Image (cartoon, rainbow, N blue to C red; front, side, top):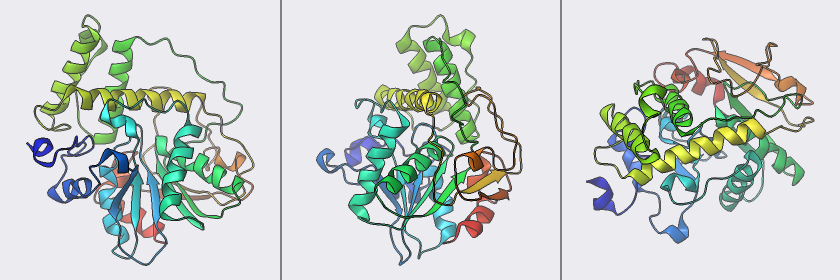
Length: 312
């Protein structure tokens, strides 16, 4: 049992596409002492280029950036950021602004001044944009803001109100896990509804173990951490209204397969080629269309195209 062997809760390891030994090694290199715990995960720490800081989608799993980091090459340091709430004990952040401020502190501990290179995927798009805004307010330069496949939430969007019960939340969280992993969890609202909250979590845990999204006999805290983090991320997106007037350049990477906001989290998707980002930026938005969909753009073979376009 890896967790016992290394004395840490690998809340990210083996999540999504079953982690390879190489990916597990990335996670095991992270410091185990909770006092020195950092949201920074060094996926590829070597090289002379300025580091690229990448923010993952809802739930904070960073392992799926592994292939992108590899294709960017050995001279490109690549760091991802993860939330502390994945341990199932720490409270999740309540807003995109809070997540961004927390991650900024972390990246500035590694790189005290700009220019900064930021990227985000899915939920991480909103966080990366907010980090760039906060950096500019501090007088720092953002040399790259790369947004992977998410439309803008415009200030005109009304914050969404949800009255979902636990079963509805868990069903939708399962859909998000399916979207990010490409696996089928076979979870329905009807199955979850009659169960107690703990039984619902256990059912999700069993389904995740069945399709290798979690190692066998994972602790319930791990599942609780993933669920609470995704729920907090989604609520944060719904209440986040980004400020217009960003002064840097935005580079949007849209996938060739049409983006589907199946859960209706974003409200209306802007139809212009920049997906609404031009309304938030004072500079023209660079739009790149890359092969794949929201999930597969970061997997082989499509990730190679993304990496080529992204090379700093």
